[in-house]
Image (cartoon, rainbow, N blue to C red; front, side, top):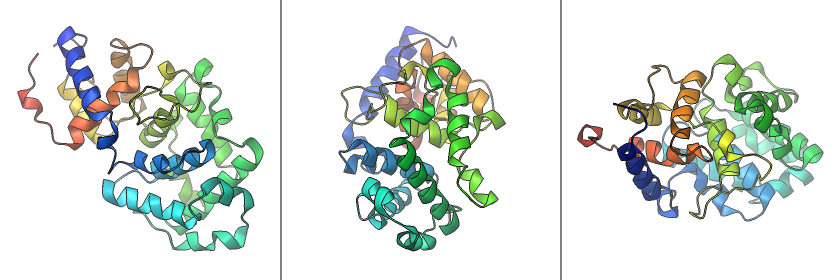
Length: 261
């Protein structure tokens, strides 16, 4: 099957419109930053929700809500005004392999970033010129400047080491993409959505392969780039819009054997 056909394009557009709407995000991690209105609160809640986005989605949302609740429901104010004593409750946090030590490091690193930059957006400023892999790797380097245990580094994926960086790409989609559907926020106007990379996990990868959008077998950075390059043929200015279609079909168990073009 040819990758780019009018039939496949129409199919993806239909699924994009089906899943890119507020009713679909009730049990999705993006629902957590939607609790907030201010830019910084959305960024912080979104980053923390994306960081722990693996496993059961209900558990992800519950634990992400627990994180922002521990911050008094005001993530930005908490980071700017709190000291080490206020961070102690995070020692008890656990989400799968993300434990209290990891959580303390993440909260402390975020505090350092917001005190210096007041946003995470400037740390991704190289994306338009050098691409997403470079920008994510640069952010990772800054984030890891805060003292931490070696084990915590695995929770910030590095595309330069081959990782698909699914959670970082998902977070960037939330912050950068802009439409009128009420899911992605479009807060970061300095970054062109055309330069985003599609979040790739087992769900979206399986669907993409079934639709002929992905040939590479491993779910790594090269596969994410391959998938995004094919999606750009449908929408060069906003290729990751089709993440809604791929993930939505995958997580909802869409019967792809019935899909014929």
